[in-house]
Image (cartoon, rainbow, N blue to C red; front, top):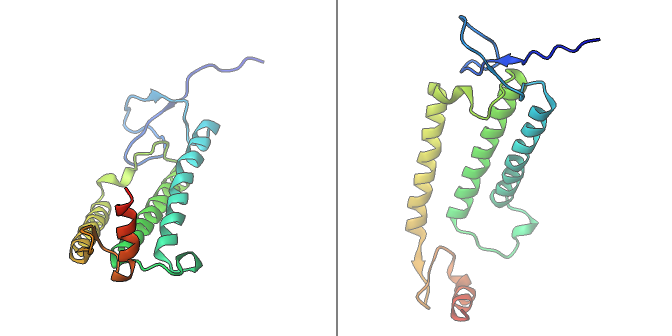
Length: 163
């Protein structure tokens, strides 16, 4: 039995899916949507996103790991921003990979108006977090600038005096 050694040709377009359209030239690729290297790459790519999402969610949600700590509003806003951003990225990547068979990490929706609005909303949230952080910043008695509450001053000053 002879195996066909013809290279597989795919097309990566904004519509995704590896389909040829209107006689476009196709390039060979060994990372097809259904191939094992592609699946392994997707798992390796999405795993850190999921871990960062869990980490940022841990800072946003109060729990036993935050007992005795006074966190400024900036920390919560940054954690919420990270949680939302990582969740949106994971959902988009999983949707485009699983549903549409996209072979690339470049999303087909990158030029869509809804994606541009989403990115603008993320940047606006980041800018507002920076403004709130600037308003929260104060000078501790030892001269160090901090956003932490006054009850943390002894610890802040001790950590900078020892260095």
